[in-house]
Length: 333
Image (cartoon, rainbow, N blue to C red; front, side):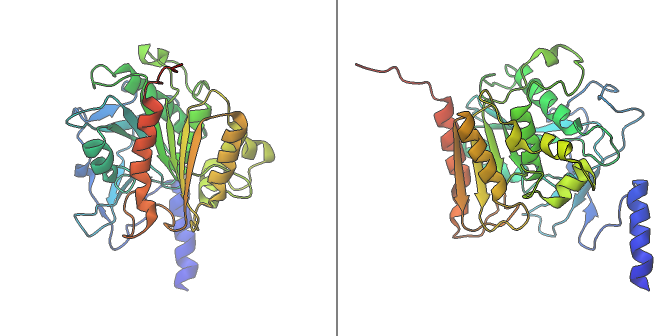
C-alpha cells in the first residue's frame, strides 16, 4: 500500500520539477558556496543574458551528503545562472584546468570531483582550477546548454589569463563521469555554435589545450550509462540522436591531446567508454594516453582506497600535462 502511494507521488514531484525530500543524512548548505560577487565566484554570463533562459534564475540547491566534516560530499542542482569557483595556487605555474564534475546529468558533485582536487593540483601542482556549475537537462529543451556553458567557461578563463597569471596557451579541461561527457563534447565541439556570441569574451577560442577524462560517459549506444542517456536524450532517443551524442563518433584530428583514466571494475560507467574513445583518438592521430586500473569502481576522484594503484592518477596526470606543455627541444645533429 505504501509503495503504491509513494511511487506515483514521487513521479508527480519529478514531473512538476519539485525537489525530492532530502535523505536522512542530507542537509541543505547553501552558505558553503562563495557569495555572489566574491572574487572566487565568476559568473559565466552577464546578468539576464544566459542563452535560452528567461525569467529570474532559481536559487540552486546545495546539499551535503556527508556527516564527516573532513570529507565533504556536496552536490548542486537547479543551476540556471552558471558560474565558476576558482582555486588559485600560491605559486601558479601558468596552467589552468576547467573542472567539469559528474553527477549523471542529474546533479553536479562539488567535492569528490572538485574541492578534493585542490591538494594535488593546486597546492602541489601549481595549477589554477575553475570548477564549473553548469546547467543540467531537466526542464530544458536545449540539449546543448551544458556545452554552451563549457565553451563560455573556457573562453572566459582564456580571456582573463593575464589577471589570473595564466598562459592562454595552457588552458585545459578535466571532466569526470557525465562531466567527462561534457568535456568530450567540448574537446570535439569547441567550435560548434552552441550559443550566439554575447561580447568580446566570445572572440576567444573555446578549444582546450589538453583534455583529461576520468571514467567518462562517452557512448550513448550499447555501453551507455542509462541514467545519463535518459536525462540528456529522453527515454526513447532515435539512432541519429544516439550518434550525435556518442563522442567516439566525433573525434577529430585537431582536438586537444587527451588523457584517459578508468577502472576495469567500474559497474556504473563501463570501461568500454574509455576504450572506444581511445581507439577513435588513435585512428584520428590525436596524441593520447590511457591508464586502466584493475580496481577503483566509479566516482573515486582522488578519494581512493589505500593500497590501490589507482591513486597514482593525479601524479601521472600532472606529469603528462607538464610533458605536453614542455617546449620541444630542437633536434641536434
